[in-house]
Image (cartoon, rainbow over all chains, first blue to last red; front, side):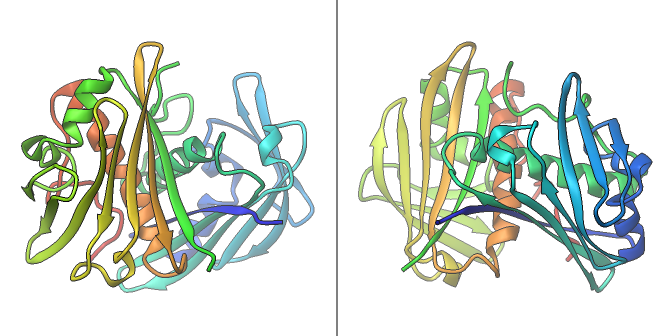
Length: 148
Length: 148
């Protein structure tokens, strides 16, 4: 089955270890994606990202300090996300850590996909701001891309 | 041949006609993508987007007022862009015009693709700001996602 993948890339003036921490420590995850983040970053553990009453749960499937973080979406969240995978691969560059973001395994790229693609870019910039300026813009104070 | 596609979506508090103008009038294009934009928006015409000494040229391939704008990348710009297509489909929603952005026909999603994906999100937010706040952030004053 053909699947679709969202990809993004940002360069962050921080060490790979600092970026890795922002992708694994729960209080730091709460500093760039959603303020209400719960759970534990260990392989096999569960992370919960709450947006008001909506919760997206992931199983942590890979952790390589300073190099890679991967999660698999559990059911009970967004239907289209169930079974999809989110990964962050880190590359140490000159003066920066390059974050290669991927959200793969989408069965359809016509419904939530374009919205989520834009929104992930917004959150990658929030991650960058958290590390470079000390403050990200996690939900519910995230940059809005649509009028509800 | 399998190809890859970047998709984004933003909702803009403006009429489809106003959004269409920002995607076709050369001085308005210069207000959200790059300040140095040249050419003519007519089917078969050429648009040139200059970034310093680098120029990306497109042939305008479809224009449906208030609904759709499509361009095809000419050679002489980014190698990976030659022959790819950029399109903006407009949907009138409640209180907003939804812009469905696509950059399709990529042969490879591993090189420039992730960077361009993030960057297009940045420029879609610039387009939104131009129309909602009166001022976008076109290059060279665009949001930077990597340290050069």
